[in-house]
Image 1: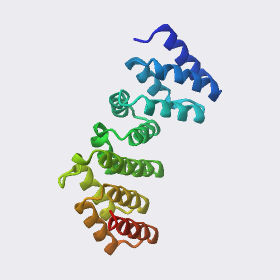
Image 2: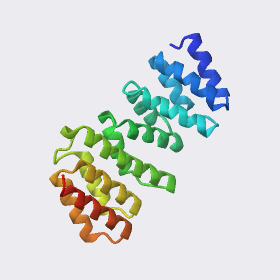
Image 3: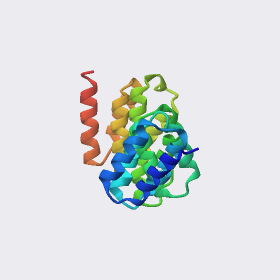
Length: 206
């Protein structure tokens, strides 16, 4: 349940177009946050001012790990692709392993437009950050690693292959390095080729 003070701050943030005012209000909420306030902030991700929406996203990142589960729930409850994309970006930046299943699913989702394609790439990078931060999740049977290898070897979107390659290079296990070598043998996009070359040359110095 929101306090009257929190409700007032949240209402001011929703109605303002002044980024300084919004930032001050968010600082107060971050210091004295409760679960209800996190959920209310997630609802404000659709703020009409892009700069303030960005500040709200940053606040939700700062509220991790408490914000992770509410963000995952909000993603599944939303039918707005734009809001879902914002949530994927926030979760990718937080890199909490509770978001792994959601990000794995997003990498494999059928895309209908460029915006959704970009969300897949963000999700692929998020997987790399999480697995780099949680090495125990990087076993050979990891659904996340298998999904990244699939994205690298089997998708048409060169930018998604690029993102998957970078994430596999960050994870840097024998399995992911072998996948990069396999990809290099079949990759036809010059930019992706060059990035894989760089990743492989870096892996030899680890």
